[in-house]
Image (cartoon, rainbow over all chains, first blue to last red; front, side, top):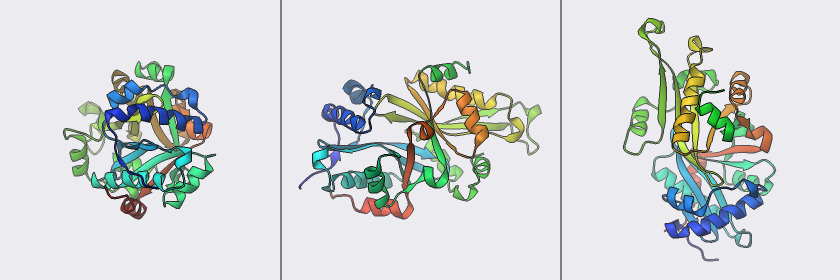
Length: 152
Length: 155
């Protein structure tokens, strides 16, 4: 199947918002999605997206290794899977990251999501949580407000 | 202090960054991170003469579910200065800066054996998403990252 990978534009935000919801449904957390198309348009710069799939990423920083990339979402619509699109999107993110001087590409997967875990491990990554013991922690909502006010 | 924290986390050999890289990446027109430091008056300086005794390094991230977020990469206070509210002060300041920029989440990671830190963060209202929801971090670096990048389609 012929496909192309390109950087997203403002006009793509409607499709990105649609696919974010599709991915959240796959991850069984549809009720968690609050981001709107308008916010995506305001907050977006350049992301690698196609209309049947997308990869949303941003630059992060490792205090041990320096510049890094975090891939927040990788999604291909179900009927377009198994054709190399997911791999191509991820490779493009890696390529852009290396060009910008990044030495890591990081992302997160749910432990029950075996198809995705198998896919990622087959591409050569390693499980930082399983191998090194890192846990993700989060403050949000009332806990974040209280922390910001110094009330905890 | 990055080195001191890495020693605490039992991985000092993993630190490859230089202070020149920190200068370039933190203080250019498009910085990759921001950093708060905790400073004490001269009369409380350490035996080696340091008055800068803690730091919090963070950057902005994005949740496709909730929008703007902040990630606290490092929080560190030198051992002799712990238990005085400095760590909490640094973390609260990161949260405050984030909230001012309309961030709705503060995220970080902790090693599973690091009980003092886990307890500290949970006491501040953080949830352990790995334990609660099953999230794992995965990573490509070194050879695996190079190999993956080489397979990208041509533009």
